[in-house]
Length: 176
Ligand SMILES: CC(C)(COP(=O)(O)OP(=O)(O)OC[C@H]1O[C@@H](n2cnc3c(N)ncnc32)[C@H](O)[C@@H]1OP(=O)(O)O)[C@@H](O)C(=O)NCCC(=O)NCCS
Image (cartoon, rainbow, N blue to C red):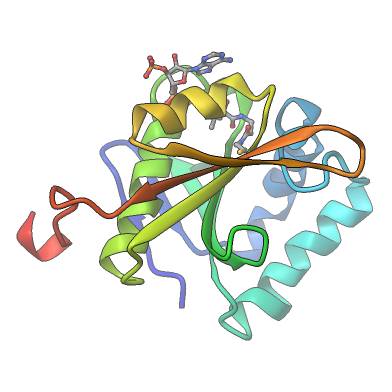
């Protein structure tokens, strides 16, 4: 069961059905969805995706997916999940544009990486990022991710695979 995580300014918690409109608005914003998964999708597809969070991901406990809230409002989305592409667990995160530029993306990414190390017991956490996505690459560089390899997609674009290894300084929450 996806647990609630707290950061200095954010609450990461499981989605509730009432989040549907805010979730769809987040993923319908192409400034966000251009960097997510297969890119922008129809509103119907995003509603179906939201539904599958409950009917598949939570119901079958496939992986963790969080609504990211600030002051009670949905400001973003986060996941950590095993993928074949990286052969391990990958973090995924997005914030609504109004929340960009305040260090919140770093806060979300740090929280789910720590969850991967401390709770899932991982020794390595991956991220895959479209090569032109400077914001995400800068964020990951800032929190200790290193370049592993590049993937050339079917459309010729480049996806960078990055990873962060568990370090001695990544203490368990019990030790914090
Ligand atoms: C990626 C994203 C989460 C960053 O969120 P954010 O809260 O603005 O990021 P932060 O404020 O924590 O910034 C982290 C670093 O990235 C830098 N940065 C942020 N936006 C940037 C941009 N557009 N271009 C270059 N650098 C940028 C910041 O200056 C900061 O660097 P610093 O630590 O050297 O000062 C946000 O832009 C987003 O949701 N984008 C759309 C979805 C997405 O790309 N998700 C990731 C898919 S891999």
